[in-house]
Image (cartoon, rainbow, N blue to C red; front, side):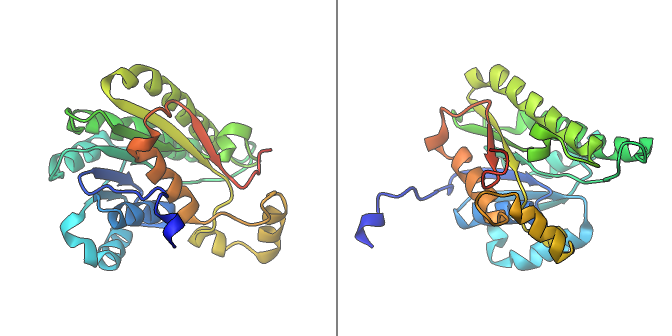
Length: 253
């Protein structure tokens, strides 16, 4: 279609990205779309099995791909992964996250510590470890933090997760203020209900209840999050900084 030629086509041939939690779920889709757009991608993930699966599924991108087993909650693990990177970094997507859902009355200290360690401290650890590895000559350095709709509005049974994801937003805004003059933009994405392997295990009646809350009348796809990541990482998004983009079909309206 001739009229489509003016549309934005993401080109990342000369860019490199690190995606945490990139071997499965939303992170895998983000990594795949960056690879398809020409970027070199380093996937950091805690699961050896997921990394092995990702390596197989992404075998056509071997020359663009680097994989590392990383526990983002452990600074030494992050430092080790940085040391193994074969290239400087232009784009970081902080996506790694876990859940340990329970009502506050039933939530243990261990449930709290595990989620805060991965979902909040992990973000600090990864970004701190990678900070000196960013491409110093680039004026288009990007940090994209995956928060959540629950970080904005809370959610029953997710004291730990909501607190971590709200913390991610605070970190994003602070970094947006501190780093913009040095060539970075720092933004957060707050996904709503997204269809992943996790939601496939949820009973149909629960999924129907979730869908009914969304004005767009459907659950989101991992591509909806990945597309937003690619846009925020592009040079066209260079004046978007320190903000949170809700990708939730209008859930929070």
